[in-house]
Image 1 (cartoon, helix red, strand yellow):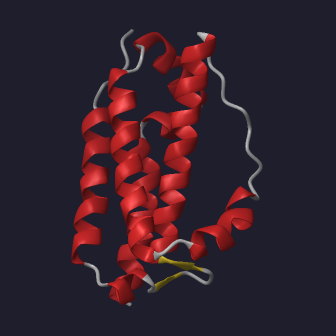
Image 2 (cartoon, helix red, strand yellow):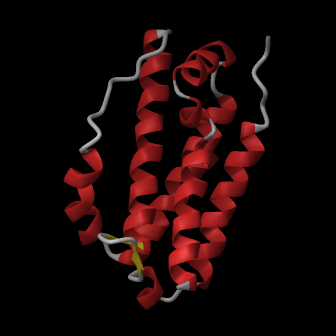
Image 3 (tube, one colour):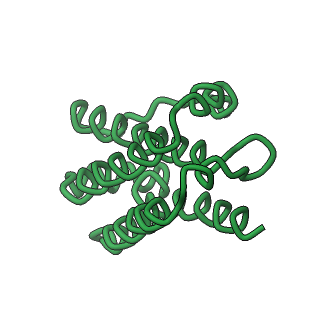
Length: 145
């Protein structure tokens, strides 16, 4: 059975949501707290990081001709936090949009057979909007106070 390709539009919509959010925020708003340790900019850097992880999985899976998704320890977010915080806010925003666009395009053109394997392993690796929208909802709530 062919995979439901609605993920393409969902991913595009979440990328557009990032673009619209970033376009209306000031540099000061990009530094607005989102939870205890994160800011809007850190959230955007986080999204770019995890989209890049999916790009790595797509590349490795295509190269190997079968699912190849090395496990990443849950602590990677905590380990990465000081690096993400060091990224200038506008750069974090640029990275989030650029990476989302790249992974969207890659997913859209990816081998359906291999994409099925990835989807069955981890649905959010294909439907990137699930991860993006979770964090963008956090940002929206934080900005509304």
